[in-house]
Length: 279
Ligand code: SAM
Image 1 (cartoon, rainbow, N blue to C red):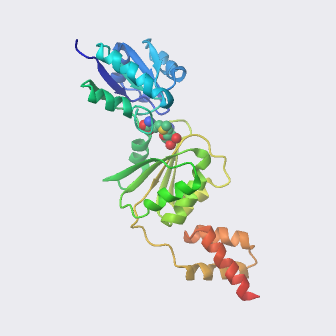
Image 2: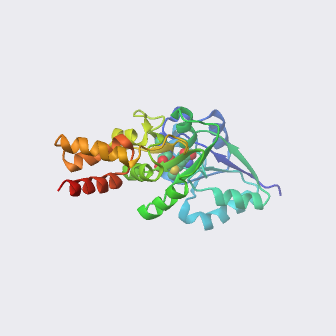
Image 3: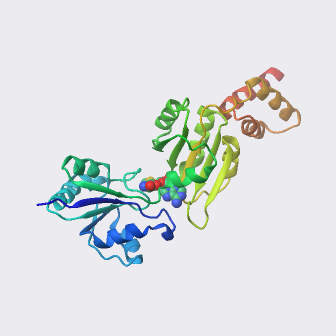
């Protein structure tokens, strides 16, 4: 018996008008749709008048569900894999299924469409000739900083996925470990509140500080060849000036860190040293 085909189908990352004609046609034709979250995907399919059977395929059931999907494919059924948004397998489940299907000699057909990484990159205004998709950073601060340190010498634009509640902490770590590089945060792509905040990391951080950050975000950071942050001498001079003007230590550290791109902790240490000197 001839095996069926596994279709890997991209779906919109916010704006339903980004669904492709081909995605709709194939989803209407397959025997089974495997989705990360069936309730979420049912709404999408209903919107496009698609009523094929749906089954779940997500991180925690992919072992046993993968076997079931492979059996269906081997029995000649066609299966479409979709994720909650964007392209399956890109920081989403699917890789293992594709790998197993390929190993089993099943034809795998990609049906391209939106992906937040490429969408962000296309309008970021950073070099696009080569880039690294770094996906999600580890949740824990220590591991995240370790990963970022390992990327400090990267010569290509880096693209990260991040949750809005970790955005500022991650940007602060990037500033400390990368310096004040050119960067872009793309938020709520293709949706009503789509926003791009561009500039050196200190400027992008200032663009989000004090705000409640909602929605989904992609962070892009330029390669290591941006000009070096001013040396600590410049930091000392600026701190001296601020403190002489009567600016509080906390505000001086914040201001100088933003303007020079030096980490807050480095500026703070220098401020404490200066205070000690003046006693
Ligand atoms: N497979 C998806 C793709 O192709 O882009 C990515 C799925 S991943 C689980 C979700 C992450 O993608 C979000 O945390 C965010 O970093 C990014 N993302 C997805 N949709 C987005 C959007 N509309 N605007 C900005 N970032 C988005």
